[in-house]
Length: 177
Image (tube, rainbow, N blue to C red; front, side):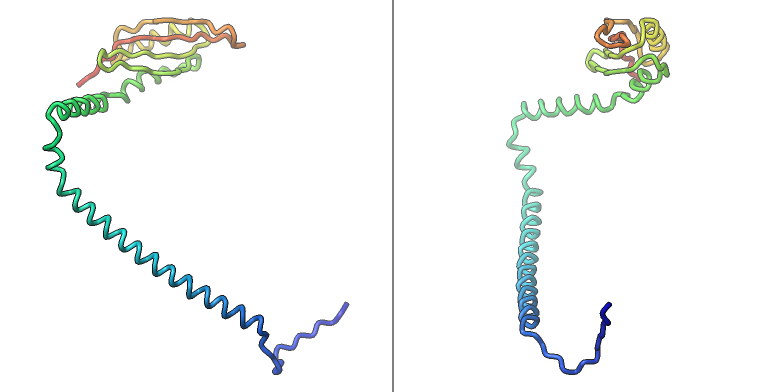
């Protein structure tokens, strides 16, 4: 093995021109980057000021915009908004809890569809056998949220190896206000 001799106190050092050129290029790049940063900062301040001005201008215009809308369009939009508010205030959690809390491992729910205008609910699912469906129907009849529960349709899934029974249950949704 060769001996490694490091001399850190060497006095006769000459600067290489390549190193100095690299240092000058790095400094020039830093100056250019700083200049671009300042330009971007100025553009950002101008954009924020423009946004503030346009926001202030739009806050002053709504009265004029509402006056230009005709009363029929306004009435239709108001009716639609009231329908949405009505649907959002329905006790959805109570309905889902009633449909999902049967606790039977033999029934899997696939969907819950509601007709909020007529207060009807359709619950689709799959069960291992017909007895499981009937037990689920008896459970749903005991729930205070659902009234008039009946089996709308059922079908044996012959293409599946376990041959589950797919079913649709229909019920009236009793909404407490």
